[in-house]
Image (cartoon, rainbow, N blue to C red; front, side, top):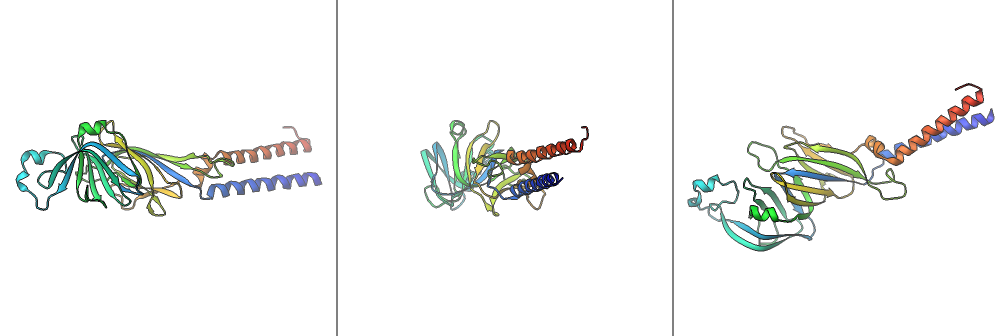
Length: 292
């Protein structure tokens, strides 16, 4: 009887230890990152570091006029689906253009109705392509253009409104998490949560309430707009999603339930506890002489 009491206490203590371990590992903050794939008509990027270089074989540089030339406001010019009109900008053709984006430079990237890539320079240190200018990449050049990579923060999709032309069309996201809950001995990354973007949403990855660093690329979409793929920095990052008509953006992050159901380590611990309890119950029945 003393042996049975000891065994009962041992199994009970072991079960409590496993439960406490599972809860601790599930609720302990682990490093995670977001991966985003989006089909969008526009995105705003703020560059970080000094390793961002974009090359174009041909481009049109649109420099703001000091005084608008309203004589250029012809019916044909008004009908053109572009922000870069000769009434408000001086146009200059450039070939073999290489732009070195510096830390803090900010651009807005979009595709107009004629398939041209438009880059609005919102903030820039250098004056070769100054602030408030536009770069227009002709449709035939953009079709053959390779990927444009970037390191920095990004807001994907503009605010949805009547006449908006930079809205997000579709996309998806997933959260990849590392830590002891994923593997005891290796730096393994597991997908713990995923979802889709709805048309018109505007998304941004945050870290401690500030824009997180993304490592991304921009390519031509098979349909309208651009395709943006990015992986965020690792940390306690979260995804902010704003919807038209919703005053407060939605914050998406994995919770402890997501960690448990996606963690092979935690599932294994729960399995061990269940197996040990089953063996103990069988042993107890056998000792008491009952038939199973």
